[in-house]
Amino acid sequence: MPTVTLNTNHFNLDVGGFAGFFGGEEAVSAMETVHLYRARRWTATALASIMARLPVLVFGTECFQDPNVEPTKYIGLDGKPGPMYVASQSGTFLKQTGHLAYLLMQRCKDQQAVTVNGRKTRPNKVTILEMQNIKFDHNTGNVPGLDVHARDGFHKHVALFPIATSVATCILSAWGDDWYCFSLILLGILANGISCLVIGSASVIIQSVAPSKNAPPGDGILMDGNHVVVILGKEKNVLAITQGKFSLEYKPWVRMRIRKERNRAIIGDGIHNVHHLIGKKDAESGTGPGAKPEVDEDAEIHNEYAAIGLCSVLLVIQFLTQLLLIPQGTLFGQVMFLISFAASWAYNLFLSSMDKEYLQEQLLVQGLNLSDDRMKTYKLGTRTAAAVFACLALQPDCEHTEWENKGFKPHEIFRKLIPNETHVWVVWRNQVLEQMRSNNPEMQHFDLEACGDRIAAFNDDDRNLLRDLLSDARTAFQQHLILQVRSRSLIGSVTNSEKVEAW
Image (cartoon, rainbow, N blue to C red; front, side, top):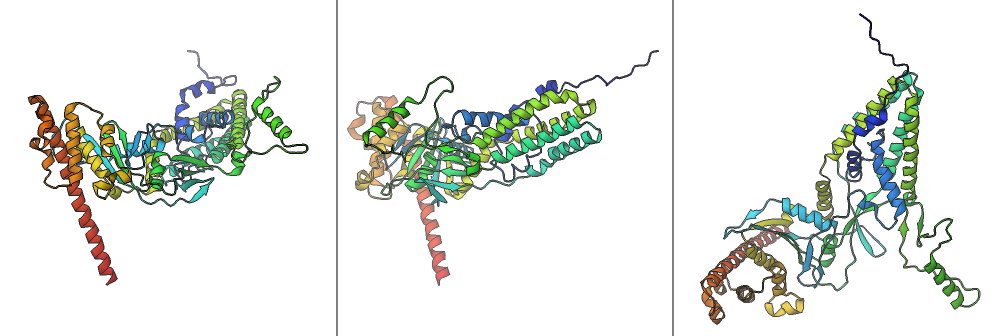
């Protein structure tokens, strides 16, 4: 019987074929967590897989190509459209808010709700959020900002596995006299480590919008399907949710080149920025001899993130080097390279399995101090009850004669929440408004007899529908009264405790 032997002298492992098995999507997803955890950029320095460098390739080249797009959009910290926002006193209406409002809405949807007894058709949730006073850390260019501290996690201990694997395979390649694979694994460790350090060097901040000095309260509602979030607080605090966003604050050495004009010339084609040239000639000819063109101090500054682009170039070179030189190594060295490759892919798979939206929600809640005591969710049985309950939460603490001066228009809020204009709904809306103005705890306006001649022409179906709608409104008023009693008792207990401590 002939002896079967395995000749590995002329055998080359197809590392590129194995690389196709390990997907790059996990690596791209893993890169999105680099700013969400503390020490994440340090624990990623020894990942030596090719696919682990794809995020930097995409991220760096895209930032080079379009300096108007912020890096936060490429790593998932921005870009999600938020729900519609309607202010109750300032008159602000936003058909679509931003990423932070989206995260807040998802957070409120996941919060455990208090069920309110009453008629049930399609349940709706109402979250009442009382915003804390936000103390912004810095103000750059009249844009307030708040530093967000990254979270601690056990993932930095898990990172020891790919780090130790990469270092061990590098040493074993040198021990096996395979200096090709040794140098390539070491090059991968250094190139990917430097890139992770550069990208992860940014600090996450919440960037808001400066409000007007005499702005009214920013109370309003976020509406997304069957969920309504009532936001109560000062205008500057509410703006952080409705118009704020996450931003990455990089060091100047990462941005490297900052300029107020974009170079839109095409090399070798003779096409230049015509508008810039015309403006320059007009400035030079309009101010007399020897005059210099004026510099527009309000021009938008474009950050080019050249350091990230250089990391992208470095990784492209490293990728091509590995592609060409790995076949020159021995079978043992190629297996070592593949082991380090697989370890890095496993770690990236672990990172990509994390719920990044939940991590961002935690950062938002931590940064804006949105504790559960200030954020309560209630589940009502119908859309009608939810609309009344939300409008009552927005009602200012004053007489109804002062509503117009404060800009509070409850009928407009009802039209946004329930855009029905049939006769039944018009009568129902008027009855609810009369009850809000009277503030009578007996709630006589929710009886059919209180509607008077306005329902004289109603048939039995219309009367039954109106009776159900008024019953929903009564349920919302009763729940609102319960909350008012609890709030007053809580304020009273706090006041008494303060008096005891003072005594």
